Image 1 (cartoon, rainbow, N blue to C red):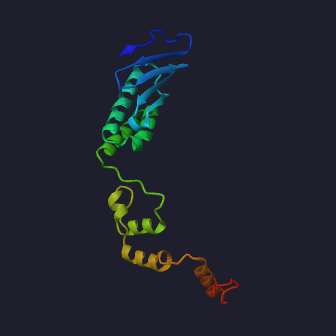
Image 2: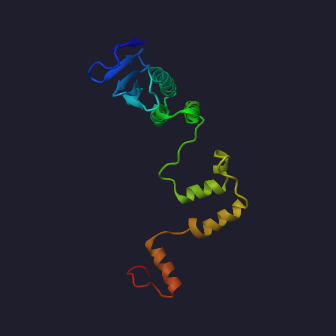
Image 3: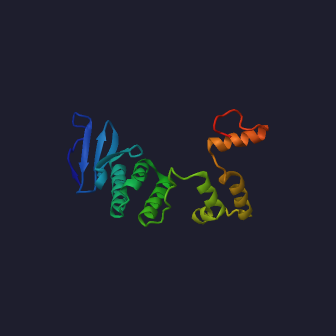
Length: 187
């Protein structure tokens, strides 16, 4: 490790420590440490190190972040793993161990794809009642007893419903005992 500035403060309130290519740089600004890493397609990014108040702690965290970033880059998962790097820069203790484990799982392809915004209630209900969610998340989702009966009930009442305005008007009219309740073209 080559020290760019031997003084803690060279009049600008900044000092830096530069390392080998791809290993990152530690900077001190107003007594706060940050690491700058090159993250491939994401470019160079800065990570604040609020828990590191000494050169030694900052260097240890730089090494850890460079290691995690290297794993994510090698697995082509840097875009998905970037939030984990941000968390790792700030975390300590057990939380930091969990983040390291999450990066390892992500790099090994053992993580589950996050549900998309296009996932509907029907998709979630069917995945739950057919046992797909309990297979993916056994510690969090228990298999549903009498799942077939629940699925049939949901299909009859909610999932099979036609959510158009016309169908709602007809349903409301049937409830009120009127023909079409005054909407043109609804009859």
